[in-house]
Length: 353
Image (cartoon, one colour):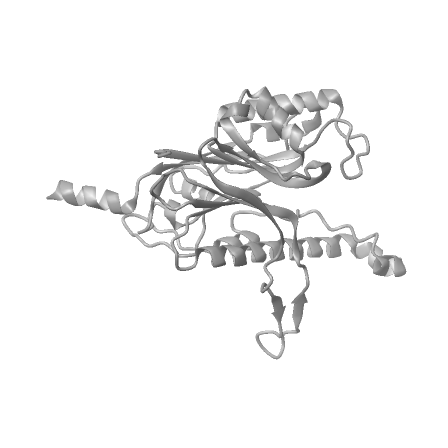
């Protein structure tokens, strides 16, 4: 396979599960009619986007994704990456990959790297010690490789879903119940702090894995998914490494840097209307596509040129997603055109001569 264009999407499925199966505190799950509407909407979005690769979050049951693809008449077009134990009892990350693109077998990363440590005695005498003991991802990270060009290195793809901003429910904890008069009024604040710590740890652990993967070897990487935080958040900064975005004819790039497709699109738009989630009338970008320097326009080592980004988010204007089968996140697709920087420079030099 030698693609001239590559399209990547990320799609939060809003608890896609088989009808009648319990989810969280909802013992009844989806009704048959709600399930039918969800499948129709998922199928319609897939037909519109037609991605070469699409990462999914909030999938509960492997059959539900298979049924959505069947509704879209796309079953034969894709390899489906879903863990064997996705039988409706927990949330998983999944993906579809256009036939012929997948290289090797997928794996789901549950635990943090063995040598990943979040422990410090502080930068100065005023700073107390800190020790974070989280050892795994809330949702296992899906990792797989694709080969859109026969002669080029395989591209490593990671699909992630980090801890949400919703406060962790601490009311079940023994320490909470041992002193409800004290902790009852602090449940929201303490829960939000715990969620932030967990999400930051997950970002740090994935960043650790990415650096090990990318450092000093020009490995192309794409990270996509619901990180439950914004483009300029600390969560995103930990993941990306906060690279510098160049302008004009400047060239550079970062060995382990990740560039947000949102920022790449902002450099082309006269107006930024990018959002993927609405909560209490606040519009945020929680879902992201992050790419290594091989996909960055101004990188000396560019292989793929950014072609543009679209966000399907009109459905977020309406809140009753159960009634119409929609989800509560926008869907993102980014496209890249095969246009290596070196080849482009040679063509320019030839024209000048």
